[in-house]
Image (cartoon, rainbow, N blue to C red):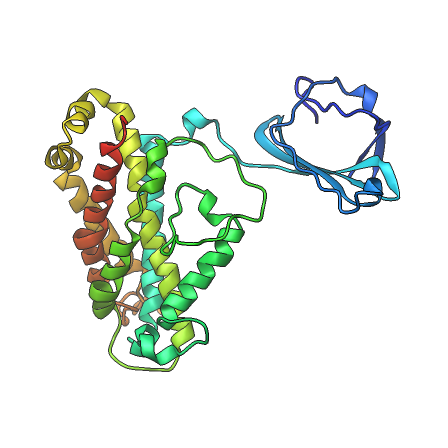
Length: 343
């Protein structure tokens, strides 16, 4: 179970207790310091061992890299260590992102976006959801959808969502820090990637351009449900667009000699041309529309009528979304990222 090369060294602790079940002399473990970070807290400074003393650190545990272990001293048995191992699915950094894996992830994200479109299409336009004067929430000025998104992002930030470099909030101002142990995400991107966030453009596009295409006119009163569907779809679209950072990094590593001269010359137009593959974009658009057609159809147990029923939404909306906004905004993210890649 334990990697003999990566073990624990603690002094004045004669007994090891794992998950409250087995006791093993600590001396049976080779002594090697493995702390990557240490957290401890004494609630009572006069009787520290009557309070909780917590150590939190990462241990390299085979066969998975990056297991998380939590150790606690608790009164009245301060000589025992209660441990909890949480396996982590961490890949070796050099193998996390490849051209093939990035392409596969982009294809899967298409599914998420299409299902998000279907969910939002269940509701009519419900204009009160977006009316700043309608909600009148005490202590908050803005629309209901803004209220839902901001408060959800606050909770998700505390839960650690935005420690993942693939996630970008719509309202990054004053987000609370994560309250949970951070996961050792691969440092694959250039540090400048953290400053690239075009969600203001995504938000504007969503409200101004996409919703009129997707939602039928009308009002059914389900404003909170509508805002929740908006949030899920907005986050899926944002994730897809900002994934352009990873696409750009993979492409740069694959052919740095093609990109570096344009980057150093700050040639935006040249980078955009280098990143544009019209035939690939057309393939993506067609695939998305076909998926939307299949996912959006009403399924019947009568095979003769299967696929001939009413669609949940117009599949061309998905195609237009990708053609007019997702693909162009993704390339905008790529260009912004590459311009800072050799800083």
